[in-house]
Image (cartoon, rainbow, N blue to C red):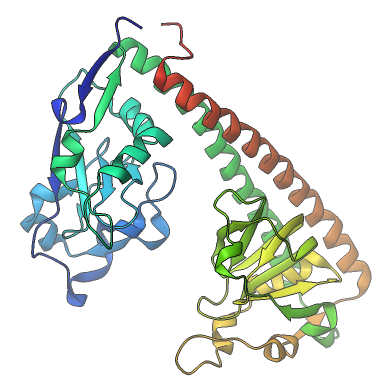
Length: 373
């Protein structure tokens, strides 16, 4: 490793904070325009969570042009989860939100941006960022800290080779996620055709509650939350933590009971804890028929809360639907099952690839494992 050299992030980059005092107002947001990157848009794996991207008027972006985020930039949150960063892969520029984010832009060709993004995602570097952040009540990050971040760099050709290995794994993972979305969309298309577009007037009217048992999840004491726990703790938006305890070990559906309404999730025979802000559907007859019926039902319309969104078990159970003969339901279940079995197989591959990537990442970045150039 004699050709690896120690340096600092500031040797190769320009680090920009958001525009001080230029936070957005409600009137600045539009349905389509220039995306504005907020701290909560920064995901856990070098990604921007596009599901919650906000948009601002074109005029604001022009006024604040120096704060635009471009492809191959890296964005950090300045407060809170300061160890998380996102690598920008979208060619469309976005605006760096107010004082909430930091942007890293590469100004030297001796440091490959993609290699650097992977380097910054290692546990050692995330730990360094967290421990060097300032603030007594909440971690705060600034450009001076990031400029001092230590780098241990191989030559550019090896940087490219390392980034290529890791990118190939991420690309395969992304492809499998894309296939899963297509497979579920195909099953949903079949559901819509058979049970919505081709619905018959002589079908029997039934209550949705006739197809399952429903109950609420259960609260979990804070001390039972464990960062590397064996089982996921699931809430209205998905995983919210880990624990060594579990409530369920079966095939079921769940949705949000309080707060976020309308997301429907499948748990496919694995041990989980479902929080008390969820509703749990068990012992389901015609599992995938119920799944897509719930997905296409506007559950938010059944909101019974006064201070925050709330949906009651009784309201879901009493939703009226038209149900065909059992033979048609049986055929749909078999066809939908084949799609979801492929999704399950893909998910197994995704977990294997993620484990391989996460195992290789620190070894490649430390030089313990070398890549032929």
